[in-house]
Every structure is written in structure tokens, then in C-alpha cells.
Image (cartoon, rainbow, N blue to C red; front, side, top):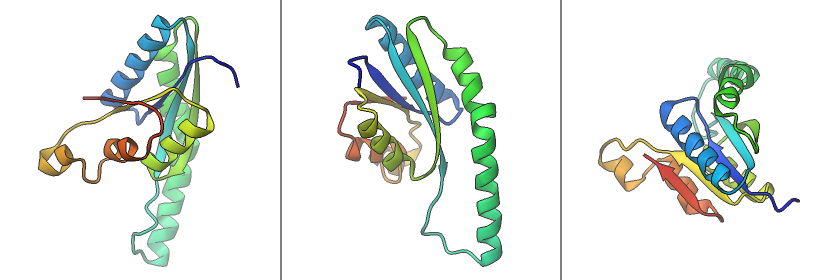
Length: 147
């Protein structure tokens, strides 16, 4: 692997994740360039109890999301974030967002993770059930949470 700086952004197409990605791009430009990995996760909770019909419908919806995420969500983000000296890669995966983002950070030897987080109520402020909190718990690299 190269010594080039690599940042990961958990990206869902929303304003907060775009702010996190923009901050990561600015930090990469200051460091003279690098690679930004935009990660889009189609959430798949294996613990939901569903009928066979519900499971088939959910599977179909997830497959559709996987097929359209690159074109509808990540490609426009790459175009908007394009910067000299910065390579932008994107990944679409199914699973638990915090686990996948941390796993990809380790796999790609990322230097830092950036994630947006919108605080809603007491439970969110405590981090319960939050993807950002999960990443903070599991990450082996520094994490920047963008409000």
C-alpha cells in the first residue's frame, strides 16, 4: 500500500454526510492530496422478525438500493467533491454501517474516518443506537464526527 493519506466517509446522501465529506476533502487538500473513500451502506438488520413474504420484499428492495446507489447517490457526490490531488473511490455494501465502515478502514489502512451525526433527543446524545457511536466504539483509527 502507498503512504498516501486515506480518509473514509460514511455517506448516505444527506446534508450531514456531505458536510463530513467536504471536511475530509479540505483536510486532504491541506495535506497535499490523498484518497477519499465514500462508503454507502444499505442497512440490513438480521434480527428483524419477518414473514417469508416480507423477507422477500425486503431483499428485493435492498437489491434495488444496491443497484441504484452508485448512480443516484455516490456518482453525484463524487462530481460535487472532485478536487485536484484527491482521488475519490466509492463502495456500496449491505450490513451494519458501523461494522462495515470500521472494517473497511482497517482493510484499506485508512488514516481517519469522518461521519455526520445529527443529535436527536437524550438517547441520541448518549449515543444509543447511533452509527456514529458504534464507529467511535469500534474504530482503530481517529474518528471525526461532524454535527
